[in-house]
Length: 96
Image (cartoon, rainbow, N blue to C red; front, side):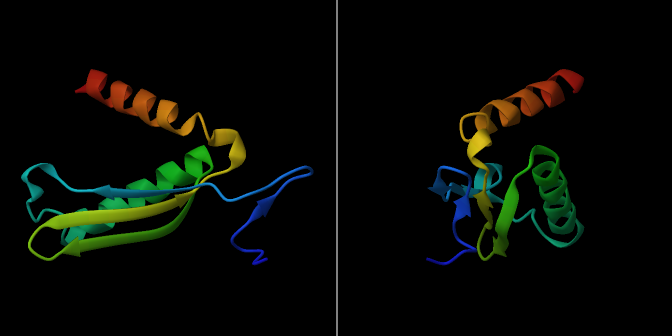
């Protein structure tokens, strides 16, 4: 069994991951240059804050902008990850 793929605790062995594909509205090529670098930085900061490991981030701008993110999360966040993201989005909307 590959040890880097599996996470173990006292009683369990698990591998919980999310594969997220996201594209901007109307699939415009906006994830280029400084925008791409800043987006990656923000995603990494958020992942560090909530205890999620980003395994891979790919930004492609062939015909349209697409970002592919592969996340690995701890077992304790399995049901809470969407709640955390929703709360952050709600908070940002209120500040706009």
